[in-house]
Image 1 (cartoon, rainbow, N blue to C red):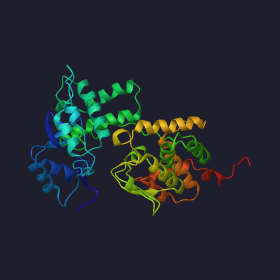
Image 2: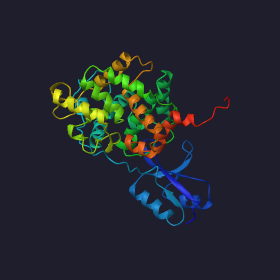
Image 3: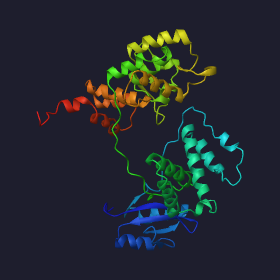
Length: 375
């Protein structure tokens, strides 16, 4: 097989019909093979050849090009894992909502696919909200007739509202989920442009400021919350999901179950935090979750945010301090103390080392080793 010759398959929707798009660099052999396919046509819009999307035609493509041209299926097939966590996915309340006159609700097949894939409830709410915003923008159109130009026009209305890049990306994800996952057309909207990612440095505060925040908490429960956010580098959601059994006092570790990306990991438990946790446990007697709200339910995310912000305000910290600032500070202080970047990546639960490398831009030892030319 000539490794320089290749075709890439895409999902296309042309005149409300599913098609297999075939993209290639001009080549006499490839062009001749495409002409031998059943009913090939050319799309000026997508700049590629296409034939009807059937299982038979997919097999014909494989047999036609096998051994002669490399077939790239990455844009055609997806192999994304389905979440298998134990969290109960709540889409029922979307189904039971009181219908709003003139409002186009999210299709049942969309809700069902979210349910089957066990997406986190926060993701479900985000996707449904954005997709309903989209389909109500095009009330007069059938969903399968909407093309890339229509989606761009919708996104343009959001851009004119000066929404954030994160907001825009969430809208794109919700729309793509319907066409690519629900309707089974992976990467159909492959050329929808996304905002370029901003490269912002994380906000980090000093160890002295961390200790001041801890000393300005209201009670032992609040103190333990801040100590774990910083001393274990936890995300707020991870802290809220902690069970009593996740605290391993013998090995001085915290077990994080079902963190971001449904990944489990182990992270550090500080001695001072453990001492305070023992006092907290005797005083508050939590039942299931390490930190509980009313009726033994999981503690609220907003409550954790308020605990951190108010303690930081009392400590007279000039920056806005959030739970994630404590996590950023944990990672940066470890790096400054000489801990290997790979170890920090594991403790934080980052999937890529590139995510962790951002802390090299704010660690003070990075700059202390550099001699200032003025000196």
